[in-house]
Image (cartoon, rainbow, N blue to C red; front, side, top):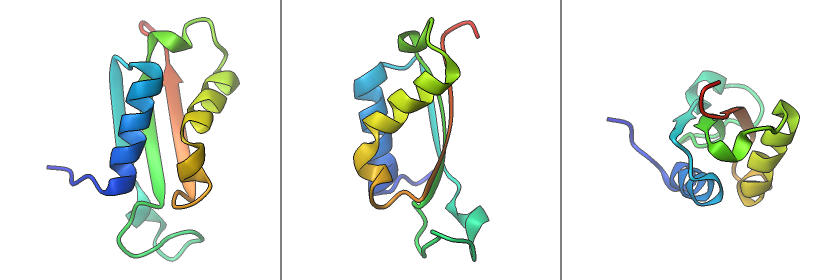
Length: 92
C-alpha cells in the first residue's frame, strides 16, 4: 500500500479537479534523489505524474505539461522540487 502524504494528496486532488482524468498515477520519487538538490527527509519533494484525460485531446505535449504545471503552481512554488509529467489523451 502506498502512503499518501499531504503534498501527494494535494497533487492528486488538484489534478482530478482540473482534468477529470480517466487515469492518474502520482508517485513520490523523492528517495531516488537522496543526496541531490531539493531532497528532504520525509520525501514529497520529487514526483512522477502520469495522467490521461480527454482534456488533453488535440493539445501538444508542451501545452499539456504547462496545463499541469499551472494546476500545481502552489506546490511547484514551494514544497515540490521536481515534477516529471507524462500527460496523454485517451487512446494515445
